[in-house]
Image 1 (cartoon, rainbow, N blue to C red):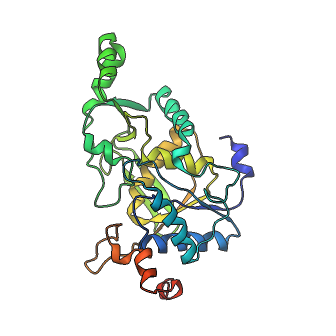
Image 2 (cartoon, rainbow, N blue to C red):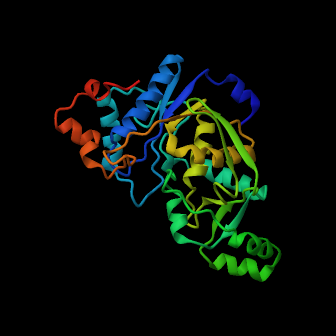
Image 3 (cartoon, one colour):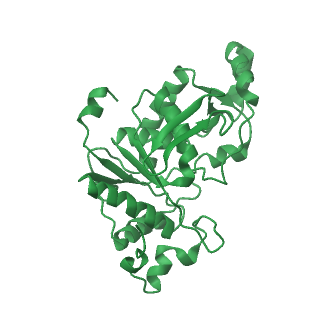
Length: 292
């Protein structure tokens, strides 16, 4: 994306980016409501993006439920999979060429290396790594092995036969800083707070980190509103923006809705899903009472 593209994009473009792996709950609703309020306050555009990369867990009924639940809750968007727009398609499963081009750019620039470690880490790469559920810091096992293989013909043959995934190489000790719209100055140290992270799986699917960077840039998003448990993901994504020579958006991380034990709400909290609350006769206005 050129500097001219960024200069001519709308003043404000926000987004709602649910993943259809279950029913939306009150935590999602509050974050999305804040995103809508911020877009409306700026007279901007709100985009709905269907983040359906996780083929094993995404279901058509959840896609339909996302739109139904958000409409019921009072959310309105101007672009999305149900209404179109200038920057579609708006479902990630329909955007493989965008991710492939970005991955090739990273590989050409030597920002990534082949990795054959930890199937569990790789499977988890499709999902947003929330605080408390984040992947362990990768020890760099395949860093040096990858360098040797790239120079060795026999090694390249061996690599082709393995289930090779690709990790982004972080600069250990680099401080990644940004200003959050709600929490103020933030900083994370590469190699300490997070390690080399997966960007591309052996089955040709991009990770959450790569996909959202590519999509937010391509859809001209100017501010990302999401939960504060994704602050560390912002640090990773800023490194990807720089490697891909893209201008990052602003970020605003919302407080989380928790259950009675203080745990972050997850899709397993069925009684607090919007579907269940609506079935009990709850009204969106009542659910929003007390929200700032």
